[in-house]
Image 1: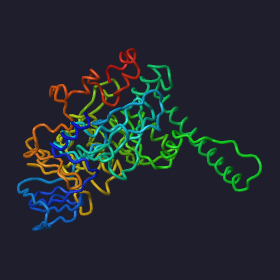
Image 2: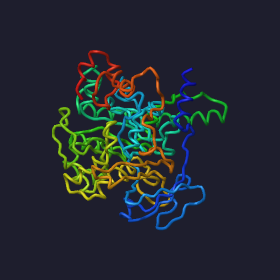
Image 3: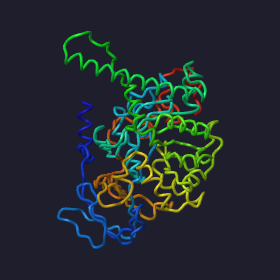
Image 4: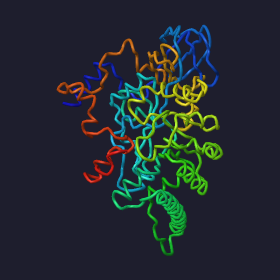
Length: 467
């Protein structure tokens, strides 16, 4: 019966369940913020079958393609959030300091109403991350905000694999200080990473030797069969990290731990990594630039726990001035709706240029997720993930009027129904339904540590109540 009700609700709201549907639209006379080629006045953008085909003046719409007059409005790439837990069903597999084998792939809630709210703020893609309870946590999932499609339909097709690491207070409190499991200290965090990398390398050597010996034994059909070395998914993933097939996104705050992980990664040859949060990254900006490390920070959040007291609103600007690829992230469902304002603060605080600040919520997070060849700027050949704003996106008076993903309109300020929830229980009050997750958890703590409280029980709840 529940499935039947859901079907009728979907039909009533005109919501498509088809995965990764493409759209076509001609947007005319906008000020186009390209990110990579300046701002273009009175310019048209033609999107066909989900791809930006033409950018220019006086373009004509092909037969059957909708035309939208954006005179006096701004068109920019969809906002990308490199650090989100927006629609994760489960966030932390917190029982072991290393859980590289788990993924967020099955933890995607495609009907979370927050997806629609994010679209209303001009966001089109997010990086759904595992939490920060583990030194090496689970693998992330890069999503397009195709509200109302299936789990599979939300995936950013062919996006590189990612994984969450975590340094500092979160993994030490959850494990060493809360449950007597290594790591208890920051130096223990380093030992966990080095120890597991060494074990993974040793496993690979033994596994490859076994497979080679087995192949020879099977071919010859005589002698003593080799002793099997069983496949180990955790070590397989760790080797993929070392070999550069998985991008690391690491929860971190202090400068000393940031330097530590760069030393570790240099020792093992790991490249292409991003420090998330990174409140003290400004202290080591030259070192980050030298190592090619990326950062993804808050514009002005700090002092919400002890290790985050030393910070500054100039962080993003200092990193940018030193040549570090930096993004502004939300790590918060509400902030995700106003990431344009968060990026604008970088201009206000540190006099960073408007275009560089816009890069921090478009092209730079795309680079950090390995999808910058497809999104993050308005260029011919890139995906039609774009937003029409009533004014410049950094103005507090501007509103996102329409948001497109792959050329298909997923948000329309003027024409969408007031209530865009996908699944509605007629017996649920609106306020209760909209705050369902908060009611279940009965808390409002850091999303990075979500679910750990349920896993660890009352004692751990007491120990980890403030993050």
